[in-house]
Structures are given as C-alpha cells and as structure tokens.
Image (cartoon, rainbow, N blue to C red; front, side, top):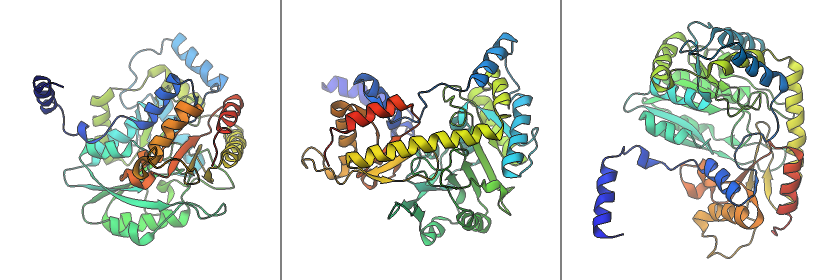
Length: 410
C-alpha cells in the first residue's frame, strides 16, 4: 500500500464507528461461506438442512394468500402473542400479559439486541458464561455494556457436565451489574442449567438488583431426561427475567427470523421502543404461521427431541472414531470437542491459533466445516484446543461427514 493509499485508509477509518472496530464478522457464518467455496460438508452453522414441517409451511403460504402482507402491529401480531402466552404457560407454568409483556422481533438475535439497548446505561456490566454464543460479545459492545466473563469447565468424563465455580460467578457480580446472560440449553456446550444452579444465579440477581436475560431458543431439544426450566419460573425472578426465544430451532425455520422477548411491563416498554426503530416489525405472514406452529401438540416436541437424540448419538460415534475427544451435550444440537489428540507440525498450528488452523485444514483438505473454539471465548487462546460441530443435519449429510473425517488420524 502506498503512503497515499495508507492515508486514505486511515482517514476512512476515522469516519467509522469505533464500536464496529472491536469485533469481527461472525466466524460461524464465515465457515458456512468457506464450506460453500470448498464444497465441504457443513457441520458449522446451526441450521437444519432438512425440510421444515409441512403444516407450518402451508400456514405461511396460506397467510400470504390471505393477504396478510402489510405491517403487523409493531410489537407483534396478536395471534402470535396470544399463542406465546398459551405455550409459555403450558410449558413453564408462567402466565404473561400479551399486551404489556411480549415483543415480537426479527429473530431472537434482534430480540437480544433490542433488550440490551433497552436496559443498558453507560458504566453497566453484564455477566456472561463462556464459552458463549458469539453474538453476545458484539451485543455488549454495541449496547455499551462491559462484560464480565465466567468460565465453564468441560466435563471430566461422559457422566459429568459442563460446570462453573460458584465463587467465580459470585465475584463477577457487583454494584455495576445490570444483567447476566444465561443461555440454556447452551450453545455451544449443550449444557442445561439445573434448578439448583438457577437458584444460585437467582440469589445473585436479587442481591445485586440485576436482570437475568435468558436465551431459551433450544428449549425443546433435550436429552437424557434433562428438563428445561425457565428462570422466569424460579421464585423471586418473575419480575427480573427477560426471556429471549424464537421459531428458528424448534420449527426448523432459521431463515424466517421470527423471535420474541418476554419481559415485565417496564422493560417491555423500552424494548418495544428500541425494536420499533431498529426493524419496525417482523414479517407479518410468518408471524401468522408462527401462531399456528406454537399450537403444535406435545407429540411434535417429543419427536423433535427423539430425532435429535438419534443424530446426537450418530455424530458422537463419528467424532470419537475420528479421534476427537467429545463432550456429550445434554441439550441443543452442538458437540464441543477437544482436538489435542491430533499431532500436527507446530509451525502449521501455532498454540494460540491451533483451532483456527485446524478448522481451515478440515474445510479445505478434509471437506468438513466446523467452528473454531476461539470464537466462543473472550480470550481466543482459551478455545484454541476446541472446535464445535453441529448435528442438525439429515443422515446423508452425517454419512458424508463420516466418510471424510475417516481421513483424519489422531
């Protein structure tokens, strides 16, 4: 680059937001692009490659045919809000007001961002477990929050689960804590937080007068008898919890972008204002279809979990046979793995970027796309021995991955 070009580039950077300079593009979405480029099997981004339920697709087609094609009410079409109320009460035993406590957004991603912008003030801190879903870091930066990270420890054996140190979590809270972000079932670890863990977090929220913002998008994808418990149903947390959820994972429609925030009236009023000026509203015909989807019988959710359990076991066996150390998930549809067994030249895989180099090697040479573990940690070195796989894929996709991963040697 010439001195003139350097000067132009520096001048251009001065015109851009300093916030956007603090984070990169999504690593997960980048890996999908690399999968397409190299014609690799995509086990990186968490979108199903199988069809959504026929009844839900038909409901969307019918909504368009019925001319539900103009703006819905900014905070959400009433049939969808009513369906959310009914379902949340049926599954969690908590009754909410559809007129004052629900905001429909353009996916759970926007619901989280609108929530953060609605509750955060300069100097506020948020507590985040890591490894974390990669959006939470940029969400904190864009909203002006200072994150306080608390590490979860990987399972020591097949019968144990990801865990956290209660003293470390307690130390992360303080007078400036505005909220804790809790993702359960968790992406990327598959951890499902227990009632005892939720009650411990509850006590900290009450002590420090903090919100708990819960991302519950994987609520129905559970294994081994685990139960999803929303923080909103824990005693003392009804008025401190903001529940983020959506249609994407439960109904296999990640491209529809219909999500929501359930919150007490006061934060809901702020969330609605932010949402209005961010996106105005989610797609009206897809909201109508969502109202139908949420009325699915319990048998639908039971079969969803059962089908994913089969896929989980399939990929666990594939990865173990290929030489990965696997951490068995209890929820969601991801498997975190340790790649330490793989012996590659150190110059090819520097210690602090081993996961990134390994992920690129997999997609370019082996033909399987994964997510490097560093994208889930504040300090990238903490995830340098991990990569994440997803199993929300049809059998032919998993079989293709098995064939290609057999080329690896631990």
